[in-house]
Amino acid sequence: MGPFPHSAPKAVISEANPAGTDGFEFVEFAHPEPAALRELFGRMGYRLTARHKTKAVELWQQGDITYVLNAEPGSHAMRFVDEHGPCAPSMAWRVVDAAHAYAHALAQGATPYDAPDRVLDVPAIVGIGGSLIYFVEQYGDTNPYGGAFDWVAGAKPEGVGFYYLDHLTHNVHRGNMDHWFDFYGRIFNFKQIRFFDIEGKFTGLHSRALTSPCGR
Image (cartoon, rainbow, N blue to C red; front, side, top):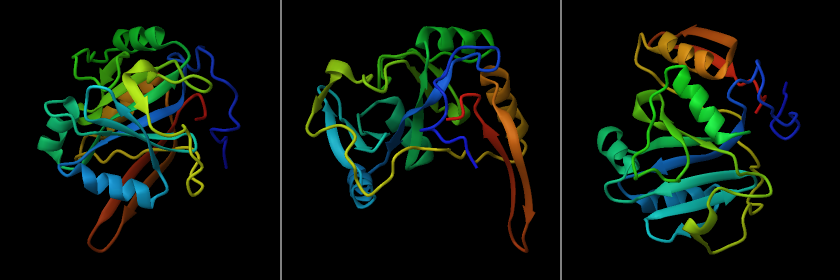
């Protein structure tokens, strides 16, 4: 198994890793009833660590994992809720150079997202289903949240032992898998490592497992 995020070498921009990806910074969540997410996060060992100074946005953290809870009216996140219900409307990737990652993605055909309702003032593109992918270059000993948040607790609480995110899953409508496989491969040089074709009596699963060039 592996490589694991905590043991993968530090990312560099290269032919193999053209966008300079270096793992996850956060996953954003939204819900018609935000209290339901707060209760769930708390049961999973996450702790509220910061609140946005002007928006209904919170940071919930555990180890090296950050969940962003967005309940800001009129935001991209809440419009996503209106369309999909409880959801994960965006994720942020750590990158060596955010401007480079953004320019590279646009050069490969990605759609930019620069509306003022972004959860962070960093480059972002449109991803699967209209969700967003943010590019963050401040991580590790620094963080991208800067002066926009008031900290109410220490960052990276120990929680119950979750330390990092090793993968996320997209569920797509039938016929769309190849399109999004091409998106991640063409723009970020993700590679397929496994393919699943499981047929049950009443249900089935077709899945392509991809890995990033950074190993995170």
